[in-house]
Amino acid sequence: MKKVIYLSDLSLPNKSAYAVHVIKMCEAFVANGFNAQLIVNNINTNFYSIKKKYNLYKNFKILGLQQFKANTFFTRFQNAYKIFFILRKSKADLIISRNILASLLLSFFNIKNLLEIHTELKGFTKIIFYFTYKIIKKDNLKFIFIHNKLNDHFKINKKNYIVLDDAVKIEDFSKFKKKRKNNKRKKFVYTGSFVNGKGVEIIIRLANIFKNHDFILYGNIDTMSLDNYNKCNFTKNVSLNEYTDYNKIPLILFNADYLLMPYEKKIGVLISNLNVSKYISPLKMFEYLAAKKIIFATKQPSYNHILKDNFNSIILELNDLQNWKKRISDVINNPLKYKMLKINAFNTAKKYTWKKRCLIIENFFNECKK
Image 1 (spheres, rainbow, N blue to C red):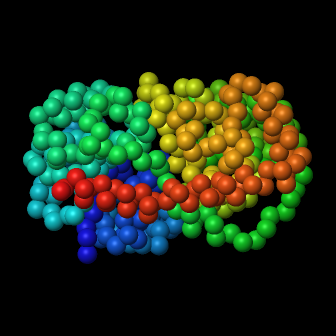
Image 2: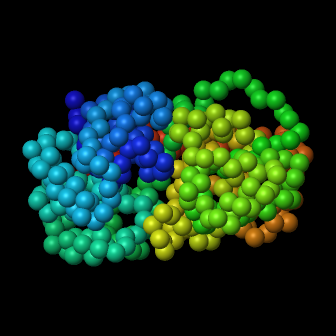
Image 3: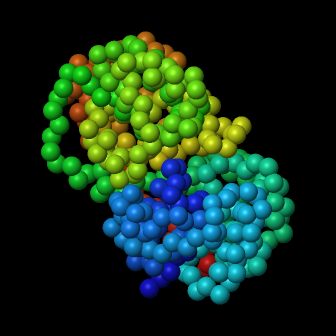
């Protein structure tokens, strides 16, 4: 059986979309006929718990490198060397990585691997990357970019990278058969991060316009600004909920009437002073599409190849609240008029599955070896 080793730079348990990404990728590789192993910095849970939290139907091994959870530059460097000593005798058919330091070290010692990158680099990692990439053999390191705009920063030869959006497991979101009641009071749902730029401010303003409807938010409250936290609690029809495990997301989206993705022009992440708006490929966007719901999203060039206005979503200018009000009201008052958006959303999601993504990666890696 073919073997894939997936190198991450996270610890488990974890509240990030990053964790969903790597875990669902490993499951998909197993579904595609691989024996998979995921390497993490630290693991403080068991596989049964992970399997339950992430709706896994396939098994794979998870190896933790550290006894205690830590994420300093020194521990990351230390982990890179541990990974090198583990993999130098490995007979893996494919090594895929989200761990930049480990990928560079493996490449330096002629171990071929694929490095997936979702953001531009900062600090010492950026310096080490550009210095090391100049001296390594380019055939040893190939890239997966989450968006083609990322290569504006990396300047990698076109033959050495592919561009792949995030993905979704359709089966997790299409298992609900019971029809929901069509209540007059509608549920507008947002799931994901609360960092600046993800649109919490817009949701609060919409809630004050549509006071007869409910706005329900799920995410890591620790990432929300104090100002937005207080505004959410002050607004009666806003329900602020803590991060919830992935296995509960499909039901949450199924019980929603409409889904919100009001990204702003500057979109932050947990790395300070990093704007990812040019190359974002939101994992929750694919979950929203798979849930077969009407999505209200702001206009963003980074995902306009996926979300199409009046086809699989409603796309709006960020600060045009009058248009938000008009179009949301029209959708509420004319549900049959927008029925096709739900069907088209689901059909769009089917083009972006984890299994298809893994197959493209495998084929790219095999082509690179020729």
